[in-house]
Length: 189
Image (cartoon, rainbow, N blue to C red; front, side):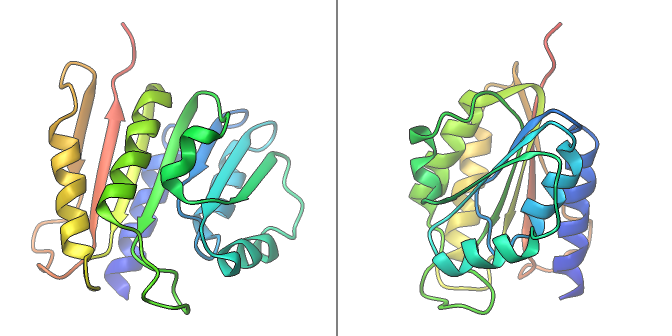
C-alpha cells in the first residue's frame, strides 16, 4: 500500500508541475475520485476537468468527493475510456490513468490493454505541447502485467522527436509493484 500511495503522490507532483488554473485536464479512469479531485484543485479557477469511468459506483464516489465547491467546470461521464474520442474535450494539458480495477468493487471489471491503448491514442492526439500524461499500471491482478507491457510498447512507438517517456519507478522497486509511466510532449520551439 505504501508503494501505491508513493507512486500516486509522484504522479500528482508530476502533473502539478505543468497543469494550472484555466487548463483542461482528463482523469481517464476516475475510480474513487482521488485524481479527479486533485485535478480540480490544480486547474481552479477557470479550468475544466473531464473524468470517465465505466462503473456507476465510481461516478457516485467521485461526485461525493467533489461535494465541496470547485472553481472549475466538471465533466463527469459514465463512459469507457476507449470512447474518449466521442467527447469534445478540446486540447488537454494533462491526463491521468490508474489502470486495473475500482478498489472496493468487483475485481472482474478491469481496464484492458486494447481499450487503454485506444484511449492513449486519443490523448496523444489531444495533448498540448508541453503537456503530460501519467499512467499508473497495477499489475497484481489477472491481465495487469499484460496491460503494463502494452502501455510500455505503446510508449516505445511514440515519435521521439515529439515525445519523451519514462518509467518513473524508483530503483529497487519490486517486480510486483505498480508501474508509473510518465509521457511528455515536448514544447514547441
